[in-house]
Image (cartoon, rainbow, N blue to C red; front, side, top):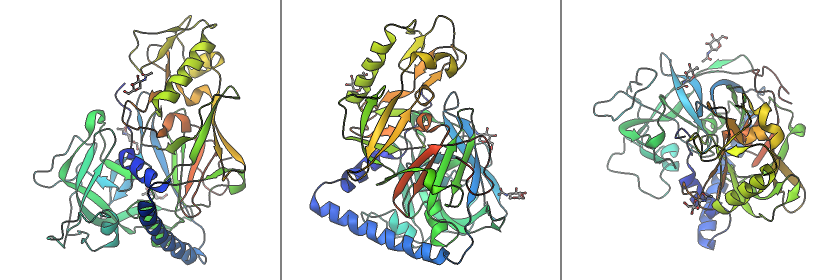
Length: 426
Ligand SMILES: *[C@@H]1O[C@H](CO)[C@@H](O)[C@H](O)[C@H]1NC(C)=O
Ligand SMILES: *[C@@H]1O[C@H](CO)[C@@H](O)[C@H](O)[C@H]1NC(C)=O
Ligand SMILES: *[C@@H]1O[C@H](CO)[C@@H](O)[C@H](O)[C@H]1NC(C)=O
């Protein structure tokens, strides 16, 4: 245990509460903010009409277990240097550990980024988007301070700079747009769950996110997708020309949340309804609020009571592990003992979209050969009512966040091969 990480959802919960119905005043403020964002996005997309559609595909490395996260290599700087970044759809800002005096940095796979004279001033719209509550220090107009905090206790504190991101497009173009990123000039705290990494790639919906920045300069549509392979690795993409939209199960999203769902177990209703659900690639495992978590475990235990599995109390890999007649080698050995369950999302009261959880989407086989439940108690880590779909439940499917159409979609996918052209995945 200990390697899982929840992304930005401490802040995410607040934003969701604001968006999904609260006081009229905060609703209003949120609406205005969203409108401003959307008009920006519309401008971005009309600029694209005359361009050949293009996407960026980035290979991913890592796995849910035992590594606990996925990383992507980005080439940044002039001349560019490679950096390994943790992929996090739960937060916006991309940042790197850096080489400045007194920075509190951690061990990293590459030499720290060396800043040159490329500070983003505080009046820059990207800086403003990070300081919606007016906390920007105006006494330093030449700089933009930022602070991001993650639900696992980690944080990064520093200033924004602009530098070249070296990117290959599927149209075979090669470009190096200047994009804003954070530098931890003042240091960061990785919380309990540190793994050696050069920084974080933030893929949230905010203006500071790399894909929002790429779309605002007209290079790709404001769409991101990922395909995490159950065998490790996979890929990430920006842009909308790599998949056949008609084969994706779409549902409206708010802040990367497909909204409210109902839990079904083995195809039957469980009585758990109106569950607020969000996707977060920065979380290795899936989190359910304590009521649903307990409900699901008791349904599983009832199902297992007639099977030759015993709880493995000596296995600390995850809170709940089961031992079989002999050690399991892979999920294939255990899948017959477990039933599928599903989250069913209602689209504006009309149709329903299902997110099915087969055993591969909620179990891992530990190094001790036991089957461990990759669904954790969200209440315990402070997620309150929010349920978070983590990497384990997104494996071997393409998950697409279309920030222009405000839709989130998923479809079964082959995540083992990098896509080269349209309609690769399904
Ligand atoms: C990140 O990915 C690279 C390959 O691009 C791999 O060599 C490296 O081990 C990964 N880093 C971690 C911490 O897993
Ligand atoms: C872009 O593609 C070229 C040629 O295929 C390759 O040599 C280069 O490493 C790629 N650059 C990045 C940043 O992936
Ligand atoms: C889940 O976490 C909450 C809060 O810490 C706790 O009260 C509850 O007992 C936990 N449930 C289980 C099954 O561990």
